[in-house]
Amino acid sequence: MPELQLAVIDVKPGASLESQSGLQMLRPRIYGAYQAPAGPKKVAAIVMHPTSNFMGHYLIGPLAARGICCMGLNSRYMGNDTVLLMERAIQDLGAGVQFLRAAGYEKVVLIGNSGGAALASFYQAQAEQLTAHRFADGDPTHLHPDDLPPVDGISLCAAHQGRSKLMRDWIDPSVTDEHDPLSVDPELDMYDTRHALPYSDEFLARFSAAQQARLERIERWSLERLRQLRSTPGAPRDQAFIVYRTHADPRCVDLSIDANDRAPGSVWGDARQVNYSANAMGRTTSLTAFLSQWSSRSQADGPSNLARTTVPTLLLTYTGDQSTFPSTRDAWLAAGGARIRNVDIVGGNHYLAGQPQLVQEAADAIAEWAHAL
Image 1 (cartoon, rainbow, N blue to C red):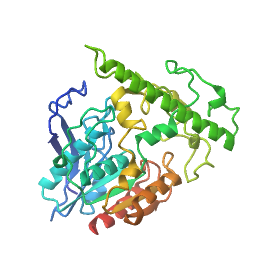
Image 2: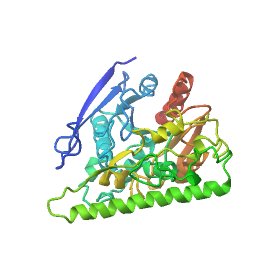
Image 3: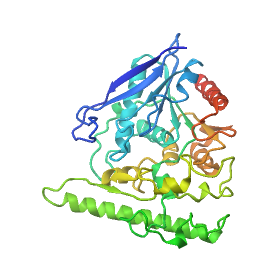
């Protein structure tokens, strides 16, 4: 088995500070870990998430054993999505593609695992036709086609549709005060035991409508606050804020909705505890990051971007997943049309944690697909 190697990749400089971690647009540097099999450099893959550390991803070794150089690549926002801009994340992914092209690989594919699925789709859509000339807040991105070399295929695994769809499906509509994480309207609280399982159609309809209404209120406030800041001399151009309780998907507790092989609960444990935790999806964000990632203005929706691409696509559906479902699979299949093929990894949980045989099954499917490109 080839040794794990470190990739240190400089990204095209920009102009403004983005993170207190030292990673900034002035001199952004990203890191990846990869295993390069001996022999001809036929196929390389990148598995990347907007924020998760994928340098130890479960597919790196198994794909290397099957003749595919696989790099787990981190974005400049690794571990902190407070100021994450999806338009910058694809710029980082492009730097990884350039790294592998320069290393001599004939074909490069993207593996979009979990939240990396929408990232990969957004990347390839922009690589084929660049339209993201501005961020969701209106500022120019200064992206150039040379930043985004197209890839040869996309494989999606346990694929979320994108952060804006996740927030739409997961935000807790029972919050009555955006400044109080304990405020609750019991009539909209899915965790209140007075709402018996399975949930009624009437409750689910009210719940979904209230989710949409809360998300729209936050978006309107974000846009207005951004306008106020940018029209006030000497004011900062952005600010951070908190979105409380962002893990309230009825599917976590009602297994009759979008039924698959999942167990009750969340990928991260007890769903209610995750909902009330100090650090969860989208909990701390800036105005610009909220608009880029979580709002209806996000350009990074997965299926709609996949529909704009032309490359072959493989979808691996993990049927025991607690956060992607049959409806998720259907959305990706509709977007990919004749170019996409689905393979069910039966019983697979979201990260294939504790399922080594299923990791090998997933690697077999990806390797067979990639070598045939």
